[in-house]
Amino acid sequence: MKLIIVTTFFPHKCDPVRAVFIKCLADELANYFDIEVVSPLAYTPFFLINKGLRDCLNSLPKYEEYSGLRVHRPRYFVFPGFGFINGLTYAIGVYSTIKKLIIKL
Image (tube, rainbow, N blue to C red):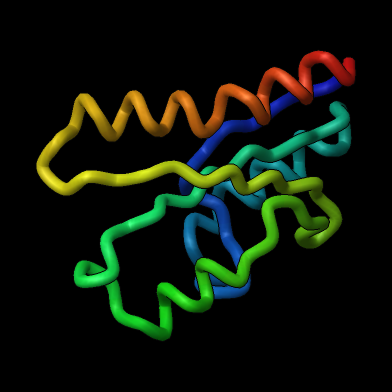
């Protein structure tokens, strides 16, 4: 059986200790399910994030095997101060990835 985990908090090479508890949870669930992780990354305005971190985040692939788990990283835009619009762009960014994974089932 396949399980899709959707979370913005998942470790990556730019922040390997980010929410490791979710990684541990996914590792445990992988013993019982075929796991796909969807961990969207935000495109943030350049003046809100330091150049080194921005360059590192932009270098992350849209798909990778991270520590034995299949991780998809769709992108979405963030507009500071516009929570509703951010939720909408998040949903749009994640939708196509999840749809492809469901069709693959």
